Image 1 (cartoon, rainbow, N blue to C red):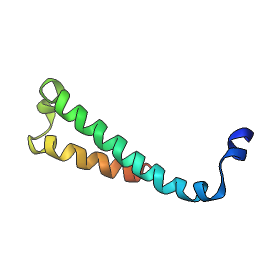
Image 2: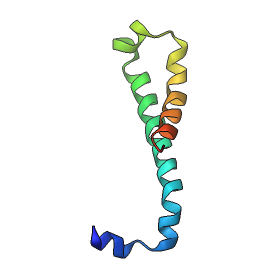
Image 3: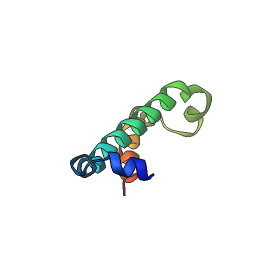
Image 4: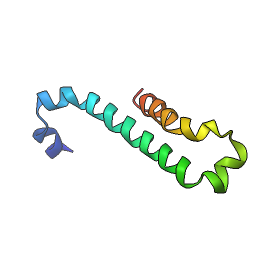
Length: 69
């Protein structure tokens, strides 16, 4: 931990929250989109309406935003 604290400079630390926000949004959007398209017929299609398959990546983006709070 101390080694990491010495190597991270102040300008990078100031940009870190915005980078984490973008990575979180990208991660959850791709995860939800992948799960919706891969497992729709086996599990999600039985309990969710058809439009939810298209909305899944958008829900992932919202979850990515909320993960940073």
